Image 1 (cartoon, rainbow, N blue to C red):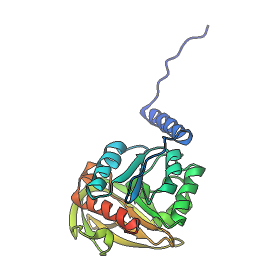
Image 2 (image 1 turned 90 degrees about the vertical axis):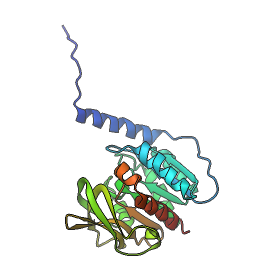
Image 3 (image 1 turned 135 degrees about the vertical axis):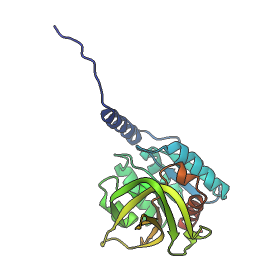
Length: 247
């Protein structure tokens, strides 16, 4: 006689199941086409685990950009939508760390966007190696990461003045993670604009990747409210989008 057994999933298994379902959905669905207004057209793309994507990367960051006069902004967590909308936009702000998001359609759309000389802002998880996609790490981020520190308080220092750092405090405090950057010698090279000093360890927080075609800004900051509500972070984000758009 067969007996019915109760299925118990560990928290890790539940997280893996959620990621699988979310990835499958993002690969096979897309939202209706977005309506784009005048001015700089910005597509914010996020999703995955460990962050409150809609709360901060969508609502707070969209409000920040709108307050700066950047009002044509849309948000998605679906790779098919991102691939469909990328040809229409001036700047992509990406913070995705969702496994499987990099479908062939999205990979092509992102590098078509780059090769067309358009703007890229890689925010927090977007500047972390997520997909086993060497061209992304080398050509867009300019390198990869060995690890990162958990959230803590540290000082940020503007080490090179640039339009992205215009109006940003020369030194400011923030609570966030710090990434351990490893430059790729085969990459196009980077210019570090803002550097974290955390217990004497210096880590790049904001840098420009010298892609030969596109304007690319990488911002390692942005884990949660401590960054997204920080005035200097807000200024960096708006400056990065404006500069990446060529404005």
